[in-house]
Structures are given as structure tokens and as C-alpha cells.
Image (cartoon, rainbow, N blue to C red; front, side):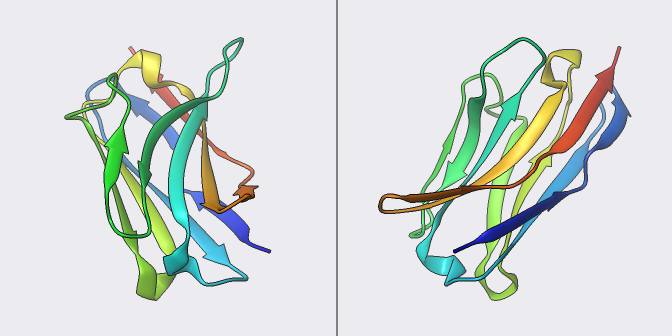
Length: 115
């Protein structure tokens, strides 16, 4: 069992930056693939970025070059650095942990980008 708690969301102007954090507890963090997803009002939840236990990273085309995912296994934390934010980045951002057939979600943190 893994518990995930996101933090770092907020209100920011277009062009600004935020850093999201997801603290994991309850299992061996380094063995999990970790990801950030987002869901805007009226839209489906979508993958933003993920990082495998071995360190490989993957990004949605819409955030490439602007967002960076990283993890600190010693601190059981995965980060998402959001730069050059746009109003269309407004959404609830969720952290996800996956290992084999087991997957866990956090409760999310709101990111709002004003124009």
C-alpha cells in the first residue's frame, strides 16, 4: 500500500513557475514508476510526465521543454517543475505510483494559471 500526498499548487500568472511535490509513504518508493497527471474541468485525466524506477522519463508533447519531472528516492518524493505556464495548464494535478498491477493515486493539487 502506498499513500501519496501532493503539494505546491497555487495561482500563478501566465509565464510563471511552480514546483509540485508528491511525498510517498508505505512502501519501497524506488521500485515504483511515478507519474504526474492532470485533469481540467470537463476533460479527461491525462498524463503529463512520468519517471520509471530506473530513471527514464517521458513527457506529454504539450509540456515538453517547459515541465521537468524528477525524483529523490532518499526522500520518497517526486517533483514536477512547471515553467512558462500557460492558462491551458490550469488543472488539478495528480501524482500516481505504479508497480506491476498495483497503482495508487494522490488526491491532487490545484494549479491555476491566469492570463
